Image (cartoon, rainbow, N blue to C red; front, top):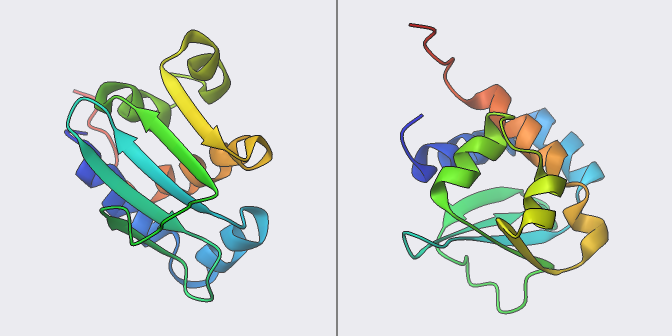
Length: 122
C-alpha cells in the first residue's frame, strides 16, 4: 500500500451497500481524519442515511471524532501492524471527541481492510 488516499478510497467502498449499513449500525458518528505529515484531511460520515467517506473535512463543522495520525501509522493501523489502543497510548494517534466512538474505530478499519487490494507476498 502506497499512501493514505488508497486507504480512504477503500474506506469509501467499505461504507457503501449492505456492509455500509451494518457498519453504520455499529458506528453511528462522523469522523475527520487528519494526516499530520501531509496536511490532508478525510471525512467519514456514518450518521447520515447515505454513509460516505471523502477527502477534505466534508463540511463538518463539529465532527463527533477528530483523529490525527501520520500517514505511516495510518498504513500500519489498517494493516494490523499497529494496535489503535497502543498507538493512542504511545501518542502516535491523537483523538478529540467521543472516546466511546473511538473504541469502535477498529470496526471501521476492519471493513476498510477487506476492501483494499491484496498485499503482494514477494
